[in-house]
Image (cartoon, rainbow, N blue to C red):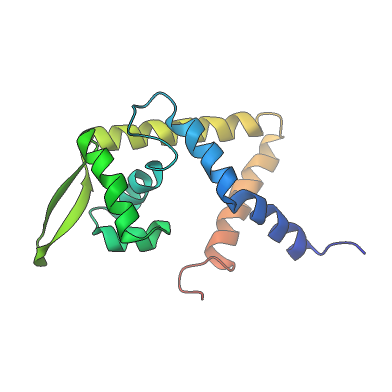
Length: 151
């Protein structure tokens, strides 16, 4: 029996989203960027780049880790000067994690590496196909099962 398009996409997404795939990608993206930056701490940096200053609990929900794990990884990144803790202006008892200039530079480097890797992967594709893939992937993310507000 032939798979449906939905099954084909679901299988591909399963491979893309599995932990080992992400760990391999994060290892490649963070290579040579300092001892504190690795496949474990990268999601904290990347999450802060997306959310802006955030509590460990809120960031944990964003990146799929518990608050304690985020805090431990943030400690390493803070010691390396890539993030800092600051008081939450909305709650004087709470602390926000925020990227430093050095942390933003690391994220810029990883995003450049990711974009270059994608460009390399698409280099043999006809340009129209690569552009269509980018457009349709964005449409799928905006309108499909991963769209904001969908449960």
